[in-house]
Length: 147
Image (tube, one colour):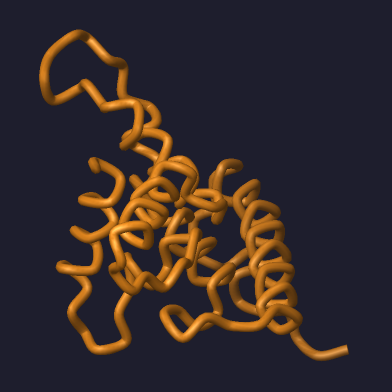
């Protein structure tokens, strides 16, 4: 057996990791396993042209620090803490990769008016663009949810 790593010897000047740091190792392992499951779903699901690796991308997005901050917000009656029900429903559905029920009537109405509509209830093509213009696509989802 080779020599022990310096971090494990009595002569080491490195501090012992805090318990919370050690506990996070298990959380990282669980996160990686969940990401692998998302990648497996993507591998076995036809991919949208609007967004590649949909489930893995969504999982990485919702895992970012602060990504759930809006869910922790306590409404206090002020304008900036109010969320219109349709907008809240759309945000929750996008977060969980579900169909956007709020935009369905917009698709139906436009199709009935003779407008060519590509029906895509996940909102991926509305919210994402492979051409770098993500703001107008994002705003398109918001408009569809508001209408």
